[in-house]
Length: 352
Ligand code: TXA
Ligand code: MG
Image (cartoon, rainbow, N blue to C red; front, side, top):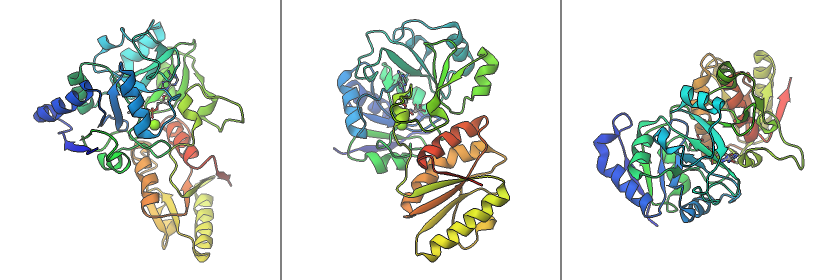
């Protein structure tokens, strides 16, 4: 299959009406289109069409028991999909939609089991990205979309990442530039009380608790699950986000962390390994003579979130065998950053 790649103006997608119309046609005919959102790129198909959902699983190489998120472009599209919206869900919707927050509800029969991975619940998200909104609204149906990466790879935050993974496997990629947040949406199960955080993201636990009070946090968010334990979001069980390199996170006082990483990198290099270091603007100068990728600024965690998946992809691109990453504090956005990093590292954290 030839994959069409077309650019759409990120700020003013209506300039590129024909491209959006072409993408919507593909969806109406049961095809697949990758599109930008403010979190990561999604791989979209008609959420109400079981065949389209099956195609998504096939293109990603993803197990079909891992449910898809259903994307809408207007709040009125929510109610036909779900069986009940709790008061707390309503409050979260009012505060954070459109935006990087996915909510889980009991589903109605109109949502096929293929889309919901066989569960009786459905995940719904109303993205804020202008291209996403224009595309979903032109389709006239809710759009099922997982992140547009090959299963197990870091989520794509650029159209070029999508093309690398999906060229020849899907009908079209809409290039709307780079994604603002760079980490997948926060996921909250609203079918229980208190609601439960299943995946941390840019809408943080603190922001939500301030609004709705107590919340629980699924175990899979902060630590590796033990044999036989199941996460509430089926997708959280997979080793995700992993580049080919063996990643180690180093935690402790920053000066100790720098010293340890430098020693290990010197040693690795002397043994003939290709070693990479993921550092920050605060620490990059400490690792002179090594392969350093600067992920962002510790004073502005949003820069680290926005670059994380790009850096993990770059590790593969540059052929690193061993990568050391500095630890980040796990509060607020740091919780989402460390959740993805720990998974990428297979929970290999050295504590100094
Ligand atoms: O930011 C995002 O959420 C991106 C963009 C494209 O919207 N999408 C995304 O989708 O990250 P995906 O498929 O890569 O991750 C969806 C996660 C998976 O871990 C899945 O198991 C979980 O959401 N999920 C979906 N439906 C669920 C449900 N009904 N109950 C529990 N978890 C669910
Ligand atoms: Mg994903």
